[in-house]
Length: 266
Image (cartoon, rainbow, N blue to C red; front, side):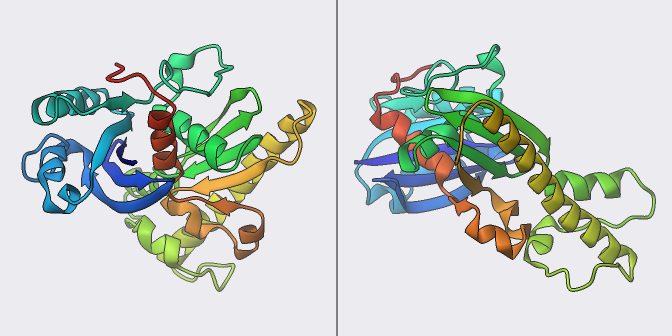
């Protein structure tokens, strides 16, 4: 069964046709153009690339309320009979939520937990390194909470925007750069060191904090799962410690659909 999954973020929407937890076709849209006839979901649904797949339904999550309504409207116009699953706190089948204010939980974070639950099992810590960094805790009983911190893009942009002389850095280039020296010999190299080494140190300290809390809860040996574009700046020695899962959010969306997520849930 092939499911079209949409992970709608603040800036970009990542999509994939998922089958048996694998992506068979994927890409990215601009969230601001999500209902655009030429560049958004309407164009995707009508594209010859998508037409070759026998899509059984659509599953999505969104952190942008306006985009959520646009997706409902577009699908209602173009594919009104298509089964539709929206993942949010009121529709995440098989995932218990142990949180005093469920409405505050980002739907993408719940999708991450669904994906981790299906692919790796509990307990798990899911680290999503995007515009913001989120840590989410999955126990045998379900979602337990987490941490939200600034991402690498926010760090670099803030330094540039809040100062008169510091240049803008490209976060994507930082993800590929190697820190050969520990002291910057230019403004740019000093900023690169501060952002990349500081970012990796922040991730490590936050993870240590989470693991210490899990120990107090008698939750031991959780799987550490990482996703998001900024994972590339983590030290090489982390590769043995972390399971890299670039499609975990989309896998969670597929899992919600397969578990019978409410059709058209708003």
